[in-house]
Length: 155
Image 1: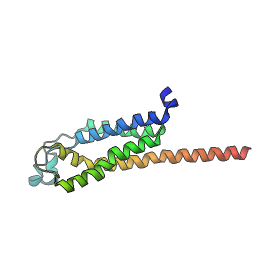
Image 2: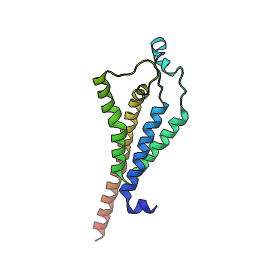
Image 3: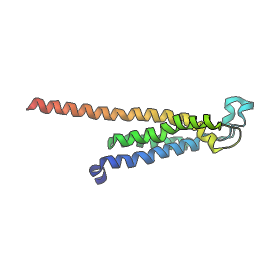
Image 4: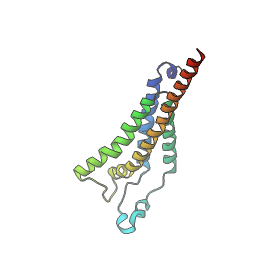
């Protein structure tokens, strides 16, 4: 890939941002949108009229893998995509907005219900992905230090 060699950081970022957006969209699409049956059936009532969406979950997993692999070219791109697209909106912005407006999960079908039910999963996956991609940075730094010490010892 010539683009990956010449503009490594830009290439990594252009892979990471769409992958993070895909993860968010797929997880939100896979989450239930109607909580009407929760009052009668308890928490299992969320899944009464909702298909499990195994294909969406598998696609989200592939998108997460692409996001982590993009750290090979740009650790900054992977970190920014992870924290700004997955973690910050679902872990900070959405709960604060729901607290200030009072718009929390309500009975009936709603896109806000889908987003609210998906946000804990997005936050958890985003934090895990952000921490996992940091391992690539640490491995790079360790390899550079080892290479420098070998070169220093040989001179």
